[in-house]
Amino acid sequence: MKVRVSTALAALALVVSGCHPKAKGGAHPGASASAAVADSASGGPTPPPWDAGKKIPATPDGMVWIPPGALVAGTPKNLLPRIADQEMEGEQVVLDGFFMSIFPYPNEEAAIPIASVTQEQARALCEKRSQRLCTELEWERACKGPDNHVYEYGDRYRADACGTGGSPRMLPVGLRLGCRSDFGVRDMHGSLFEWTASPWNRGTKDQFVAVRGGNSPSGELTGRCANAVARVPTEKSPTVGFRCCAGPENHAQVTLHVDRGPALELRQYPPSFLRRLDAALPDDARAELRRDDTFHINAAWLWHPIGNEELVIGGGCTAGTTSRGCGMIVVRVVGETLEPMAWASSGVFVPSPRVENDPRFLWVYGGDVRSHFRRLLTYAWGRVTLGELQRNVKLPPAKSKAK
Image (cartoon, rainbow, N blue to C red; front, side, top):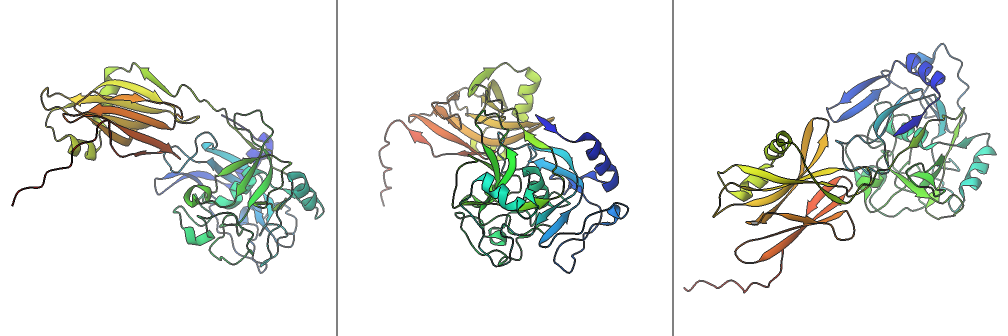
């Protein structure tokens, strides 16, 4: 994974801004601006104290100043939801200061944003105002604010803040006062997606560009500042608009190498790692097994449900022979930590995993004294959910007890 940055300007911006990594609530690394940004009479933030010795152009009408500082780009592995093959892993990228329009084009409060334009038409409309399209990392920086929030309004998803959780619609801007980043940029989500100036550098040779913002029924996912979507730049869509930036363009880009790997592969791990898998067994699994015997992992696999996502599966049974319990645990390796994600019981049979078509869907086969069965593990946005048990025979209805 590579990030290209203007090294000389980036280093200067870091020294001047005094930015430093900061853990926010233990959840993810953030970059704090370390100085409050006050609202000016025009509704935008004034340049903070560390820029007092630098000559900053007057803020254009309808725009706010985004100060130089560190963006924690993308989503760290330990934060969900996350799309591993589309987002950086929380790398810190230093950006120079720039201006951004408060609202989407035409950047007028209560106006309906302009849509159904190509990327080049959006660029031309910005240039008529002596402005330009924003890059996607500039867009993300303006959305996350000085403390690198997950959403423009904070770190916890709130559908009401920006009206996310539905389809993109051309609604008048400025109606939702809570849909505002700490830099003063508004309505970045809940309405239209927005063209950026950045190519879609995420493991494909297709000539896509990145759009940001927008809305979808999956509001928790789409409403994040790190979320991005690939679009053909020559297409017009009623769900895609744009906003403008001003000042020298930041040249940092998202450039992801996407490693997809085989969907499922049996791996040989050292006994010490298998013992760590044993210890990672979640409480609900131990309760389901109802065994005093020690659970032993006897086989392990690597599961690649999507690109850049690698999960470890451990299958095993308790030590008992006549009343043993078996199943599979799914974990994500984050540094030295094994984070349990799911548990699937396989009854009294040694579990057998299988991917059929889509690698995001993993079947776990097992059985008990009544029949063989299988259960589906589904991967979505960094999470794994367990489906209902499916038996290969239809069991007779339970007999009612005689009164």
